[in-house]
Amino acid sequence: MKAAIFYGASKPMKVEEVEDPKTDSDGIIVKVAACGVCHTDLHYMKGTPTFKKPPLILGHEVSGVVQEVGTKVTHLKEGERVLIPAVLTCGICPSCAKGKANICQNMVMVGNHINGGFAELLSVPAKDVIKLNQDIPLEEGAVISDAFTTAYHAVKDRGNVRPGETVAVFGCGGVGLNVVQFASAAGAIVIAVDLNSQKLDLARELGADYAINPNSADLKKEIRMITRGGVDVSFEAIGIPSVMRSAFDSVKPGGKAVILGYSGSDLVIPASRLMFREIEVLGSLGCPPVDYKPVIDLISKGRIKLKPLISHRFSLDQINEAYDLLEQGKTIRSIVVPR
View 1 (cartoon, one colour):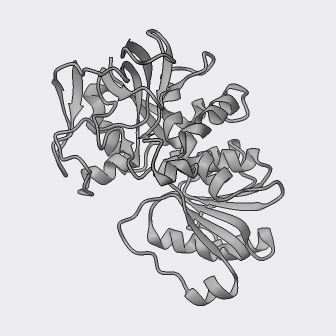
View 2 (view 1 turned 60 degrees about the vertical axis):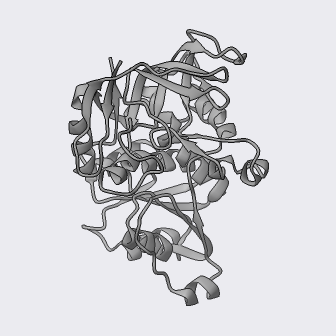
View 3 (view 1 turned 120 degrees about the horizontal axis):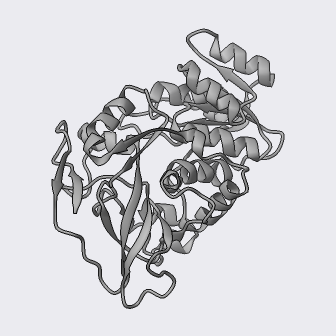
């Protein structure tokens, strides 16, 4: 099969012919329809260590069609359309037992611990694989496995957003725009914050009530004028400590700041405000497999939009161009179609 191979930090991926993957009795082989282009892979490319050393096939937002099933697999069959969760879980560790499978202590991440979706075929354990509704486009549906489900978990489970609450979303990329969508669907008043006017326009289309560009407005003043004192919940979806601090500063007494973005640097916040104002700072990682079906159903019902999030499509041979544009901030969410 054809695949894009990651050989190490600061090196371009190389598209090569490699051996087709094999599966065991509990697994499946998926013919990849598309794989999303995510910032997480950029971190690997810049030197953030993975748990499995290269060479490796990256890509963790994968949709496709089941091509082969293991002898013990009974819930899937050949020809079915599927979505592969970005994180595969063990189901038995303390985190999984508490309903926190997204932070499974034995997690296996597609495109990190095992080969990912920038290939024509992919072998994965069948346990967590999700069937994709027929009314959802197969290729575009790939990004549901991270960009949509990560946002859903952040809004529903970590931010616990309620109708009538005020929400600020810092960073309107692929994940941040979906935080806007899910917060709006939950009945919140949503403030989108970004430096890119086109992304702010799209945020409005997807449910943001207000849009602020910090380059052209006093961010703190604008948020306090809109909310009369601060938001109930803020979300940081970029991974920049200074923006995380802005998200923290935007929260009213008793509110929450939810951090979705990854950074290898420390976040410094004032302990006095944290204590005196009883502000919660919460991390949010991925999404438990149990929440994938509700997200898919919301998209099927048209309550959450999918297609506007797909800004670019690339062939497998264009994989490095796709990541160059992502790094330059010129895309919302791209997909790579391997055929």
